[in-house]
Image (spheres, rainbow, N blue to C red):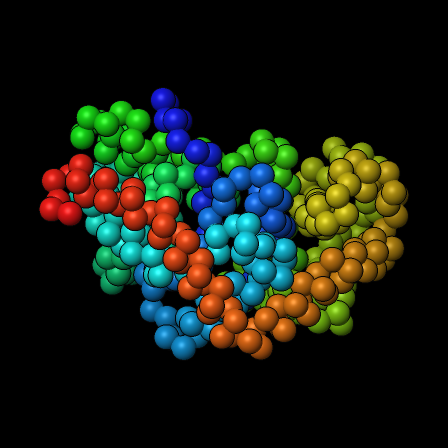
Length: 342
């Protein structure tokens, strides 16, 4: 963070573009719950990022409420952490324009996610999709966030945020104005997280975009559906190994054991000491029981919360007001720095 002397602040967000699944929970939301007790946390529903590809307006609004419900149902306390919608805080858009003028085209051209998402239709993709990483930098720097929980697919975007922060500081001779945001690494602050893979292909990340409905366990799935999906999860004919090294080259087994370990709070080695030598006919029912035990209360609470959209909207609006209290002074100083009349 160079010589930055400001407070330690955590920022993260989830895009409202599909149902929340087990991977979102174990890889991100559960981490949010842990972090809120120790740090100044701002957790956003990044609905501005969502419209980089076309969204049905009504579905976008519903999905925004869905993410908010997932945060709250999983245990994020809006009195401790700031929970809000990105579009409700003007600093995201205003700072994004200024940072668009700081970022270099060559930097953005190196971002692989645009190439992955746009594919062969890059000429028809929105400009917003291309500049998505700069908006992400604005999301982070609008709060002078010092730490960002990110997945593997977002690390490159965080590097861009660091580059943009450094160039702004250099160009305007304010060496410590923006911090150099750091990725939150598992164990760095005692938090837990996991990379959860598809139930149909252990080499692919669990994703709502997978065409197989059995590849994801959604946080709103009922007990029977959870058990059915785990029963149908791809595995192999070999019994589970007794040591962790035996999971190498067995991606599906590694994934299922990892899910069990993460949900139970045990190490992979401890899980294998319990189930090693046994087949998936024994392990899968135990896994299904554990997933149901941990996820069912969240599912029930999400359904209750989504039944009261006015309540969720109130939480988001109040959160946006609190978030703006942080961003407005920062945005004002940025504007003054670049020479805007404030």
